[in-house]
Amino acid sequence: MPEANRSAKQKENLKTIVNVIRIPEKSIQGHMSWATHHFQDIVFTRLQGRNPFSNDTVKYIGSSNDEALNTKVLRYKADPTAVADFGKDTNPTGNIALPILTMRGMNDPIAFVELANTWEETVAKAGHAGNMVQLYTNDKEHSYLSDAQYVAAMNALLSWVDTGKKPTPNDVEKQCKALDPKWDPSHECRIVPEFKPLALSTRVPAR
Image (cartoon, rainbow, N blue to C red; front, side):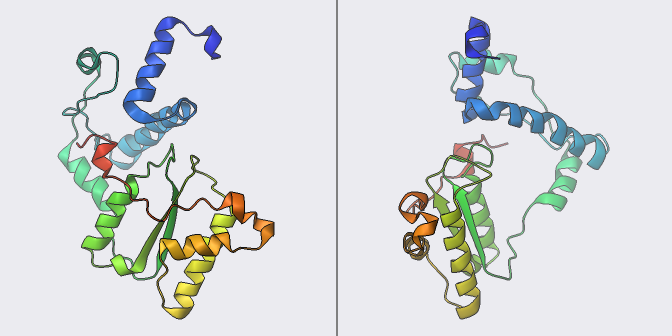
């Protein structure tokens, strides 16, 4: 609905979603769709009606009245057996045997960059930190970052496989900026080597 046609209550509700969940307005529809259809499939098709999701202990913050919000929010408690079965199927082990190079937008509105912190911890606990390099770019999209960054990342990964020398984020940034002008590296290379994502719990309340 166009902003001009929204009621004061609709505007306030939208502001609450944006501020509490911390996603841009344009991403709300997609998230709502996943929260409805994807989670529904998990519960009713994959887990025979058992719910692996919970928010019964979550305190939501960021609204104009957090106390009222937390009183009104519907609460769900996970079935422990569903959590266990879902985890067996989806929880990453970190057991990566081959070189992996990831690249994420720092302001990705779909897969929050803080997820990378959890993935890095998982890989490290499995003893495979040496097999992974994570790159972060100053982008705010999920599905596409830039051709130049993809080329630089792929070149770095191929070189790593061929030579055995693990690249650093600084290495990839330099390679990106040195690409042929046809890739427009002066504008399309937005790798931020020093960036480190915060823990996922700083973005999504722990359950």
